[in-house]
Image 1: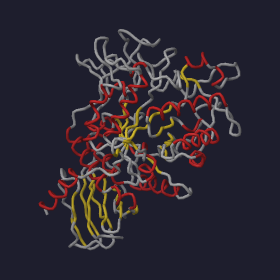
Image 2: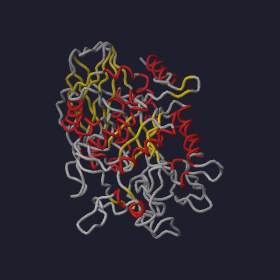
Image 3: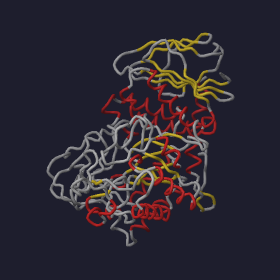
Image 4: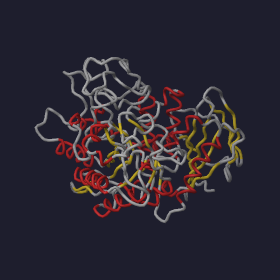
Length: 514
């Protein structure tokens, strides 16, 4: 058994990544196909922090230090590849507003231009312009068979409103509308459900032209629901005429029912998918509050049922940990992060992580919300969202101290890549658990089953009996989480498992088909 396990793990480490598309130095975008087969392993980065040089260790990038930029970010790509990532989601790269701003550098989502590269991302060590530097970074990603998604902000900075008031919704007093509590941005006026604002549509097409010119493989549309279905359809059709593999990922969820403003559209998930979006955020960010197995299983089954409605294939990301979410370490600790890793790896979705997750960054900054020594905006404070990756200041590179999370992260991504084709076609089968706090499911292929069992009690040990049809004591069972000792009891059609708080098991059983 140990010899077989050693050979299996070695094969994962030596496995050639699937979907290698950089052939003979020429890149062929395949991101849409990769995503729709649930084979995109996505890692979110903020270029401003991704490779920041915080030499004095005060967590902020001072005047004599180098912030993250497209050129020094290239040196981090080999490690991204080593971690098993095949797709980068880059948070907004367009220039940001400086008026009525959040943070000393301005929020990445306070868009002030649809076509201008954020000057903060341009290396002063290079004589080339921002477009050239961004192209070089994306080319280096492609050289490593890493796809690139660029984020499209949903709203405009106050600076952009002053320049183009025709882009924005006005209230009864003819003032631009602040959506929710996002006081650093104003709500775009994309038109109505029947007619587009042609000025704003043209600006969005210019954004598409810009990111395609950079070599990007897709976009993630921030708060996609506040633009109409006809707006998105025209924009998606425009992009697909240029590149049929260009991915459109919508930040939206069926659990979001309230509009962001009484002046805002609230386009449904169904309408967005019908307009041409390939996938969406989904509702896995609610996992942190789930107490019972049925909550997780219902979430998975709801997505699978939804996707069956459409002629064209759709998918979802594992939104357990995003730049809008508090670090899992802060919520439930190290084991919770590991549970997220293996759920991302085994569920019918595209694995998704944020920079700093693999080592358990808490995103707690010592200078957070204090008066700044200097600022590039009209905000005098180091504004942050406590426990979330910083998108408002020129801050340190994300990273934590949990090497054991990193080791499992790498192993899980290797496993996911090795079994990419199998998992693309694997059935999702919920398994009966005698304990409502213990979830269990199988991913079933023609020659094997992957069994996943987890304890949603973050404080107490739980015991459960899991029913597994056709399981026999002589089945060869492999523990994929090699760092975890398993003391299960196996019988015909059943596994009795004892799980510590927030624990998860991943078992591979050859020739067990439901």
